[in-house]
Length: 132
Image 1: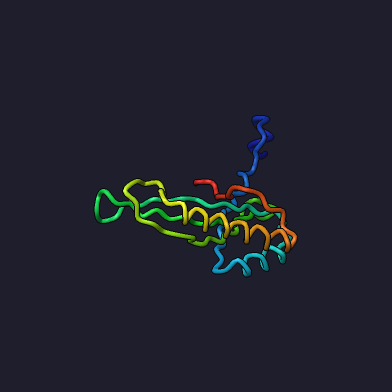
Image 2: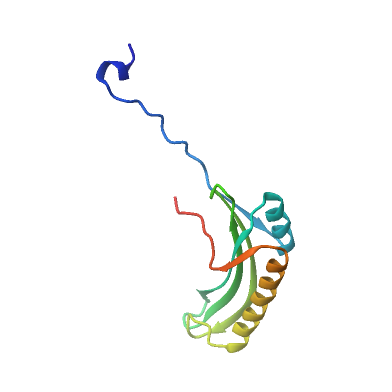
């Protein structure tokens, strides 16, 4: 007699644990080719600012990075392309120059046009894997 027959409880299998994975691409073209093969149509596009302290405590390096991300249908595979647009030194951890921001905006518009022309549904933001 099994345990569930003896005490009336249901023995349920543990949920299938599936690992998340991230696939990074060296070029936008490679990403677009793989997404087309995998039939992933939705992509996210955004620029993020990251500051890191330099050797001098009052100077920060602020980098603008363009991200193009997508998730497969299962939601367990993240496809990511990232491109550093500009890095500037600043006394604040926030970029205080207009030129790098304008360059980032132009590049984001170019990538938006390329992705849209290839048939992708482009939205703002960035996909990220959950922290485990």
